[in-house]
Length: 223
Image 1 (cartoon, helix red, strand yellow):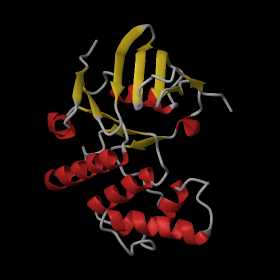
Image 2 (cartoon, one colour):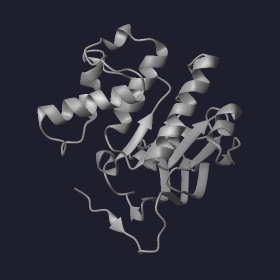
Image 3 (cartoon, helix red, strand yellow):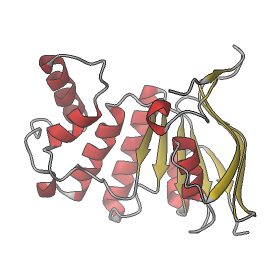
Image 4 (cartoon, helix red, strand yellow):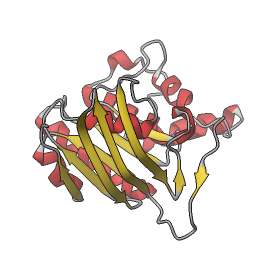
């Protein structure tokens, strides 16, 4: 295990990108120096191919080796840049729900529960509470394939949240939802992040997503 680096006590809580710069083959892709306070959203906007998802990969700890990156990612004042992905405790939502097809809805959530939550009864209760929170009470045994698009999105969100992340990274998770559902799920994600005090980094090409996030916006142009 790589040890995280503590920073001075006056370092603000939340998610901090400290002079982060990412390039490929010597060609600069993206640069970001920003702080996201707990419960706030920073939106990074730009067309496909400008490095938005690459930024998320760097923050989460799985940036491909074809990229060159510098700068630090801090979570609540701790530099996590050198930590493995599973040690950073970043919650990620993608364009697709990516639910495990071989597991039930409850099994998908159980997979994400922290190891410190022990005991069958406690874990079962945590899963039931998570599903009830998004209007899916009693669906623990359902096959994910039988769920609607909105239900899948809710299960994917709660699978991330029950893992107790320290920050939330959103890779255009609303882009494949129909218009009516998109606004509903978008509001739900931001509401739950605020309630839990999670700093959120959203990457998108959609201005409506940025407006709904109600936070700062960084626009990235093609190099």
